[in-house]
Image (cartoon, rainbow over all chains, first blue to last red; front, side, top):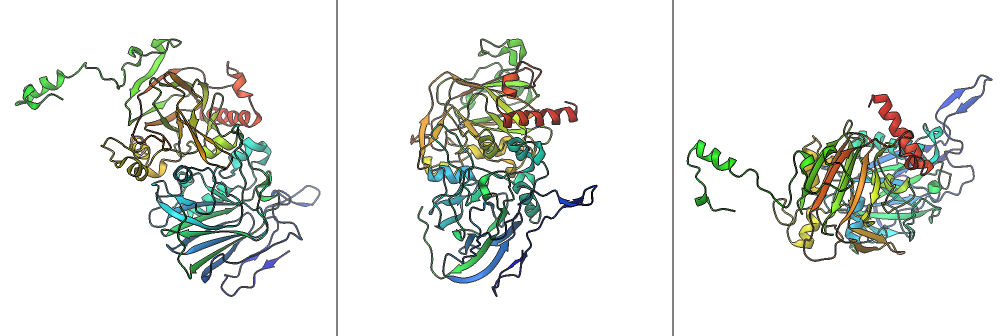
Length: 263
Length: 284
């Protein structure tokens, strides 16, 4: 199955959801070490959506299932992220594009707003307490920044050592971060767009079935020039991708009107 | 402070004598060396076994490299301490506290006895093995200069309301680590709880005289900033002294007395297995 997006602004990208690592068994069969179903099943509903704010589109790209992405959103520009297949976690880290020692801080974001969830109006703050981006539109109830990123290593804790060679978001962050001179020490607690992590009364916390749907979106206005890292989560052992990893669409717009932060 | 007139420092010898005369004084907050001389040695600990004894000043910080198997107890003698804490694998400090995994892997947001402090590398850096406070926080991190300037009107590192992050940056620098090496932290002795709508309910301190005790499961760099919790609702910068004592014990291992910790949950068991695997391979 192949999906190509017909959009004159968009860089032509073709998604080919097939296993990428194979080996030959003694009886001559070609088998993949990538988990079965690690990309979306035929017939999955895909809603590619469009920008959440009116204005000129300056960048429009799709992120294949399991893949990483990065881009710089200039101050005043708006990044719309489309959950194309629904309930697809977009793990996300933000950095000051001119000084990456200043980066997204989940605790500062939460402490400043006095709330554990990201919603419309949430200011995504740096480790200096400064606004990096603001959530100006959001089409699901709440977004997560507690659940962190999956990794080879943490997968062994959650599911067992048999999943050691599954792909993970931390792998994606390291791959994508290396393009910008970022390494292990730069990977901190992240945002998970379209992922659902409730905190219950007794402190029980976990990734549960998502509240998103095909075509749901979130829009972020950059307050300063912001480097955005995305891992289109490849996780196949919990419901963060509905066990059916789908693409994301990243659209950067120059908005026609100024959006005021609610916070 | 004594005025300059009380000092005779016109020559090197006089200056030396003057400086030396200042030794032996006692402060409410200071390290105790050797640690065995601590005036506050916990009753259930053999003073001779102590490897770290200190009372950390309000608004200040401390840091130490601890051997694997060290047990360290933080005490809040006044009910006003707030121990913002970071831990790193001392052998490879890119391995450090990962707050998200620390909450997600045990399926529990609130820190308490038995809770592992996990790194992002699937290993346990430290385990909470004792807790008489129950008021801790892994959501809000520590304060920044911007936050303290907003809350208290000042955040100068040399002033009366230093920010936790600024103290962490200095403590980290003393171990060769830079500002980018200061990740989200946890705090002990001042708690918040998450309400149904996600808002934080301030529960603060459970009172004077509580303690929390941890075991170093690997050689650790420990950084502690003792500053007000960022959600402390009081308008003043209020924080009390923090007492620290450490001594050597066996690390968590299926062959030690710590079996119950090792087998508490399948996720944690595998985290200890990963930790022991690393230690074995490194010859620790």
